[in-house]
Image (cartoon, rainbow, N blue to C red; front, side, top):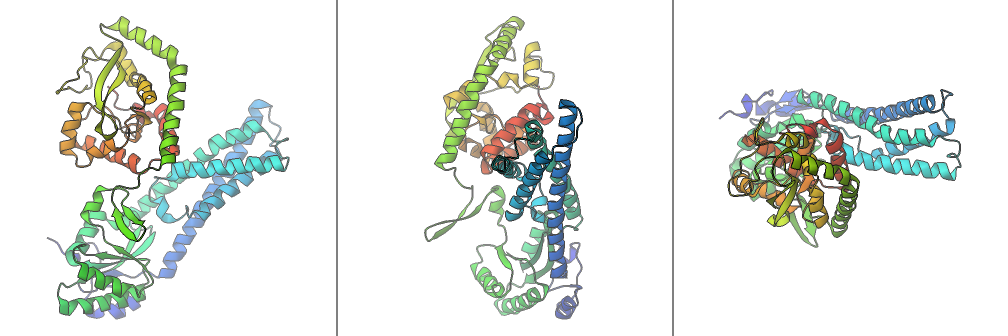
Length: 500
């Protein structure tokens, strides 16, 4: 097994540490390593990035506003210039949006290491800013002269432009982080050598925007531990890290207590290093009920209002969908009957919420209707798929009868896709957290499907990725996320990928 010295980091002897770190160069601290970076420079870099990110939003929003004004008036009335009141409302909406993001610290560099959250969080703030701008315009009597069509166009395209710009900036930050350039946090590591090595190899913290400025390897001997901690504390005082990670098994409470006591004297956030069990849960967090503190592994449960809101959304949308799509449903049913022998609808047993069995409704797309202990998955070029079946599977039309299951309360519009009972039994044995998918109602569409994870499961990697996306949805559910998934289901190319 390799040691810290084998990692791609500079190394010097313990005796040189105090002088070298003070000179802002590299130094080893008892088998560990340090790369000193002035705290003022790191803080300036993070502040500069936040300003750039905010200015990018401002520029994109204003350019979109001008483009919407110009194009709308060009096609609607013939070009006669932009109406000043409308531009003023757009500028007001832009200012509100950016200020809201500033107050919520959305422009922190750590938020630009991934695109997760920018969609629904930004959409909520954008909608609030838009409504406030409309209210201001009504009270100031500015909406009488403004172009309502251009303002609605601005609302629809403004946030899409902001989202696209943020996606591009996220790409730049991620590439910089992978090269060690983007530093969201300056991190100091202390713990046993094997745990530090495992942390560096397993999590590669630089890809998350962490600049590991020093690592101190502790000796597992009572007579040496206090000396090592004294050295670590003195070094941390000089380096001024943002965060200190204590990397020791949680069962070693004596070592953790000594480390916490030592670093409470350092102006930095203290973190217990991740135990392997936490890798299985995306939203583990500290929960406190009264005086009892606990580590909540599988995230929060939805409160009553959230459950009611999701159910009302399902009822309204499924009822409206059945009413509006009834002509299409009748045409598809007739085409299936004319194309091949058998019923138009196919019912198959699936597991729902809390593994309660129900019969899912689908348009029949194959010549067989398997529902036993052994079910053969459809494959590319499967001869069992009918001509009409191939078309309706390609465009997800075969799933539309499940609106009835949603109306009945057996399914939701959005959620993990239910698998056949026979496949459930196989996947539960192979994937440890597969059964968590049954903690919510299954959906007609889901986060995995709109990311292209649909179709035949012919490798362990495919089912692993699908489960990971399903669990991400469960842990990050919100009504805006449901709406976004439905929009992607209709318009995103990924949602139609891998159809059989």
